[in-house]
Amino acid sequence: METIVGKLVERETGADLSRLQDIAGCRMVVLGGLPELYRLREEVCRAWDGRVWKLDDYVTNPRLSGYRAVHVIVKSADSFGFERLVEIQLRTVLMHVWANLVERVTEVAGCNYKQDGAGGVYEHFRELSDISWRAENEDVELEIFSDELTLVMGSMLKYAVPATRRQGGR
Image (tube, rainbow, N blue to C red; front, side, top):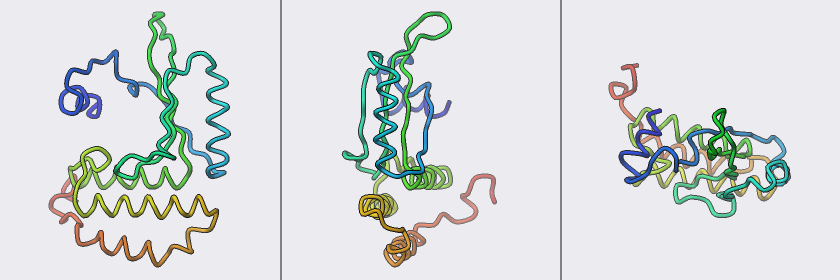
């Protein structure tokens, strides 16, 4: 709910609930990497034939933050017969792990790195996204990139939030 309010109040001035495309939706995480992700995208589009409103491919065109996924936005009637937009997110396991990491750091640090990030941590998230992208594209084990991952994660530690700022004081 907090995200929806944020979109209405802060980032998307002038937006209203009827125009938000991600107020309802689901996320599918595929185990088979990029080939499986694109196969599933085609299957979803075929299943919603004629009702696909928009297709956002953040895999080939990632957001500045490094976020990667495919979003299929479809039109669906609610229980009252009103047409609503529903977002179906498709991610690989590595994309999902990256997005969850960003969300957890966002919760602790109080800065929405997925949308509003800037500075060092934001740059490191992009680096992590690029490393995972290369691992998926080159179809190699992530272990090959362990030195790079260690370097990036080590660099991120200097931005660690002190224990007193963490949620719940833990």
